Length: 260
Image (cartoon, rainbow, N blue to C red; front, side):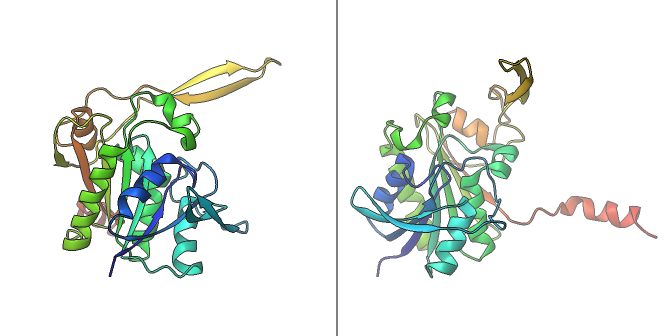
């Protein structure tokens, strides 16, 4: 029997990245798509608890999908509990744009969907593709025209290996980042601290009222062994992630400090 995969993303159900992943995965698995109806980048693990979630069954390129009127996490929860999908693996992506470092995995809807699946005890993988032009992240993902062939090969290799061999002990999510041009091989990495140099740009509207854009360039230098360093050198970064955010190194000091 073919393994069953629940496929989702944060760029929306029409994203070319999502359907590139579908093409790759459907070669060896039964793939069910449940993804947000609209672009939901940078929503992290936010969940729709104050409004109803509507789901429509649609057809894209001849393939059936569930269009979920909510967040990436909503799509996972709907897939697991409303549609009763019991996947062997949950795959999120391919995201158009890299998801590297502490700051990105904390805000990424792509990674957030995978973390949500892991929270319900399903193994999950997030795939992201580096873009050469940062403006590509803000265009309509349904019309992103770059070649996904290398990404498809990575998806097939990684998912087959995880399905056959299982997850490494202690890992809840595998975060995979694919360089726009692959120059090397696979590299097991840790998260870098930062991806962007955060800045804020102040502007004035036509009425003279101020408004702000959060912006900032990419970091050009990162420590060896980090995901940012790997991708910047053309390697495919594979980072095991855990749901447990506890700082175990701090616990002994905290116990000593709070002896009341």
